[in-house]
Length: 498
Image (cartoon, rainbow, N blue to C red; front, side, top):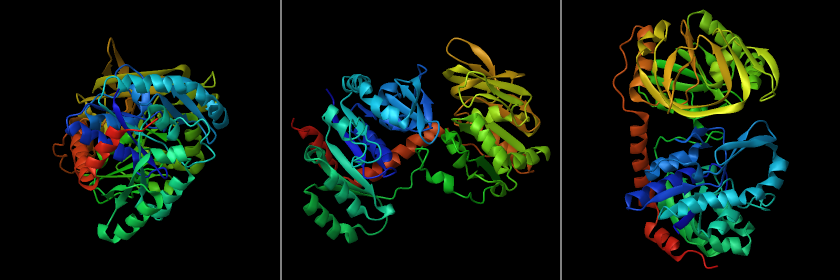
């Protein structure tokens, strides 16, 4: 069986995902076969594996850092919130149903066999497993039947590194308080503390680090500085939503829907030097962008209703009527259509009018489309005509089926080809997530917007995947320099006495 190490945090957004990714990359650089694992993830950002199964994007990022293809065993349970009190429950990549938080809390112990089958499959085929927790292990109201923090550490017999983000303040109290609230057996699993996201002179921390080690009896294995890396992040707490854009030649406004999903579709655009990309959630914020993008959503009908009630729909329609560019991806594409109907109650049930920018109708069906695709643009129009012939790759993940003259692009799957998307004037929509990730496609898309303003086209850019690999190396270099890796290897070698 593989050796293991688990990264837990004192809070959500403490840097667990990035630290786990850094360890995956470091171990891979050191010649080990390594895989990430998170038993249960809650996120609206998801990914479709090569075999058509759905998993959380955090473990996809970590798998990329480890240099291996993502598989659903790395994230056997994915919870996708449908409202404030319930989630779609995805087990081993397939939808198990929709449950309230209370019902899932009572049900989740039944999923332990699925979790352990997934973990053991990875442990049988890799040297090291890097596990990630969720939230905090000291959420004492949720510790019963825990399967993602100390409960998972116990099942995998994994030693734990506990991290805290100093940028939030109170880092010593956060680490000490978390350790104090753990049961003795849980506390014994914590073999190292990490202070994350530090800015400034590390020697100023030294007295506090020394006192923390004395109080907890646990060594601080590193102080990780604030690192300038650009990687996919989790959805609910991302800092990307708060960015106001810069002074780029092209202003891209992504509508921040209440149930936005897969906003990582636009990370590849945000890094281009010509682009200022911002997320907007009110009509006054919209302004006069070069293109409005409607992203994916976990609930198309409810978010379309929000667009209507907030005044955002009127603002987008005025933008389009004036010849402005509008793009919809997945749920955003569905909103652009003439009508949306839900005869079986997949979402809210019933039927509602769409935005009417594309002459198509969407019907929600009970079966989710999950597939990886590659494609080529064939019938882009208006300012986007230059996209015709441009190739892309990505994946589909949606419940609805859209009918009409859906001939924007030709998609290739494993055993068939099909049409996708629709265009009219300067408006187009597609079901393909990740459509901007290939450098040539992103460059051509931005060039279309530049030409429409009478500016020179965009220069050549590297693919998003190549760019991310460089970012993983930067992340690993920064973390390796700040962690006591010799101590961490020793922690894994010693394991936990049971």
